[in-house]
Image 1 (cartoon, rainbow, N blue to C red):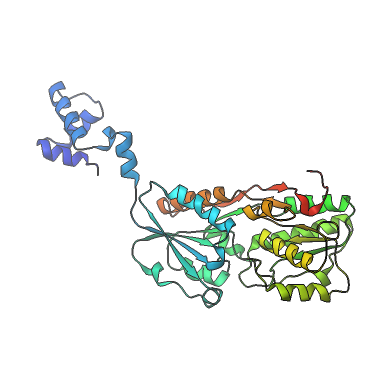
Image 2 (image 1 turned 45 degrees about the horizontal axis):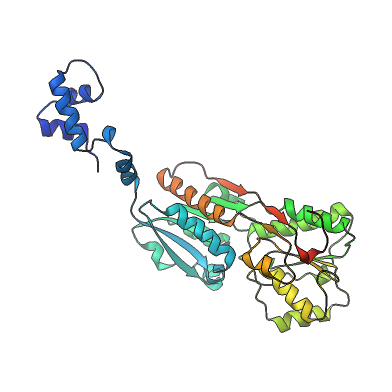
Length: 346
């Protein structure tokens, strides 16, 4: 949009040195010539004289940002993250497009054809937590920011920006509160065995086991359910059959996310158990359905839109300066105590 000193000099038939002196307030140029140079610079939109609106317009980019995700990410949690992404991209001139991949495509490392288009400026990964898939995407040479990241993939920390939530502290706080409230038999519910399970999800389980050790008790592993999909939608009759097969049940289920916790509540109540009288249940994320559930769900609130905003800000920064060091950003979480864990104090 803006012109250069050479453009102004050529337009006025003056030397570059004369124009440079005039624009930088240096002596050696008559007032009449200086006035003419400055007026021309304003008209030709030389950067020194751009208005705020001109600068905003100039800063806009062109091209596309691809949000690469799974269809299971179309839940309340991820939709809120996406709202934050859309808010942060507004006004940049970039467009946001979504590309959905399946678990099979992630495992096979199949790159969506849209990523080979020439105008792709950056990639945001949501629910794509497979190390080999991430490596193949990095080989494209396009800036990448991921919301959470694959397990046991610390080498990726130097190659892409990561935005995630703090996953451990409030799990530990919650376990200790339940222990102090008389609960002694704890189990975990959530998918820990998938190749696409994130480090954040694994951290929640690790915090759970660490907190139990601090309380001097052990997990009831025979009752833990580690193959429930992260969207929580296991066949209900199958889940009830599994629960009925247990010779004994825990008095607490800590769940990897809210969808899993809500389905566990439904299955346990259908099996004739009372929540929280027989079994306390807690989730993670604080999706909208958590407060509306019956009973209302104790959970750990994550700042979902903020995660999206920071993800987009990281990507814009990386596009502007590809050589800068990678960032690892962690957002704080908040324990939200509701009816599903009984009378705990906040």
